[in-house]
Length: 281
Image 1 (tube, helix red, strand yellow):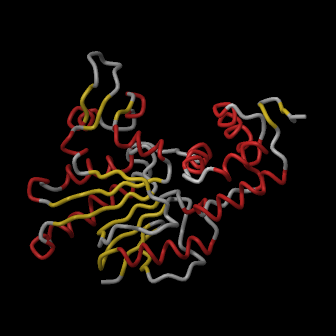
Image 2 (cartoon, helix red, strand yellow):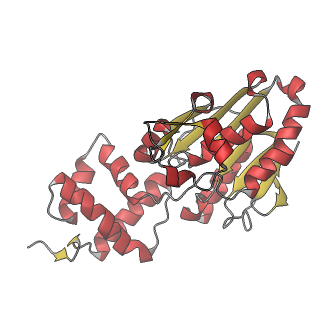
Image 3 (cartoon, rainbow, N blue to C red):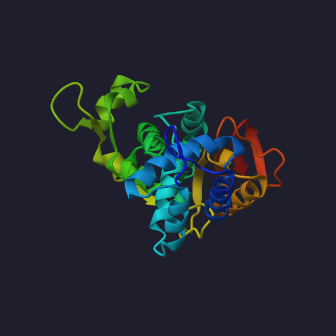
């Protein structure tokens, strides 16, 4: 007999443990024991979509899916995506006041090349904020400038590629920036807005599992990996930090989230200020 809770099928401790192990092995997410109710609620919706009865059937379906698509859908369902334009604004101030002026001074030697990676881009607010900040600071007509934006969630990647946002998602931005870098998708003050092509064209959005092989070669001048490593255990964080260091150019900058730090991790970065680190020249 199927065990059903108030919000759908019941998730047993054993089944939850299996999901925890799978997520950690496949994508490094360290799902705490206090997340059982969240998993039950979110995957319960997925079970109903598939027409299955319970978690036993779902785990059997997951194991039999040789394409790996259901695993991706499960990660999508369990991913938490909290973001906004110019979130943790002091990082964008540092980009504007310290990094970009240095890039401008070194432009001849660099060939006016600038590469930034938004690792864990969610629905795109971060990489488009980066693009806007660079456009506000440098003359993009003279620069070979690109932002790589990646996320493990296929749903977030689709949203980031569309680059369409409701007006309330832009309320933290100055009106002059909205009018300069966004276009309405339909007539009317309440219509959704899309990032203009001059910024969208600089942002390449792709799905990437940070634990798998990275196809890009670098070097990157800046890497934003903010509020991502909080979901990983210490060995996984250490591995990621080393890989980021390898991909950064000399004097390249790594931004992590305000609630994160590299404390307790053996690394080769130079500490600049809380949540800001630099690779040695």
